[in-house]
Length: 175
Image (tube, rainbow, N blue to C red; front, side, top):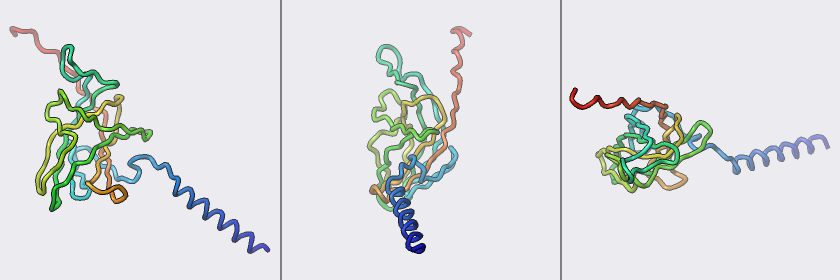
């Protein structure tokens, strides 16, 4: 009788563990390795390199200025295709310290060097530009992926530290 009870407990524990795996609410990017900004990051055939960031309170000026819900974060990067065929550059997301995700904005109006939203890169070519987010001020991780079907996708995280450069006033005219 005792060995039967041990077997039942073991089977119940195994079943619970398997159910827990199937219902896992893993944080976005928990499957991805993290890299420092400025380091080349290979994800499949695509190699990403984030060079700098810029925080803005608005895009453009005057009555047609775009005002964010939080703040605009522009991320300048390059994406190189090391593969043998054209590759889409997938949508990027930002992940905060609590696992909250923020999607890249699809409208780059008023963004110099906007990378675009629907984009491809040819073999052995590099695309350069900036991607745009509307997020609360803070440090993030940029989640980048390869151009693969869901389920076979690879991802990496690039640390985006909080760096705000002060805007210096222009000197008065005539000096």
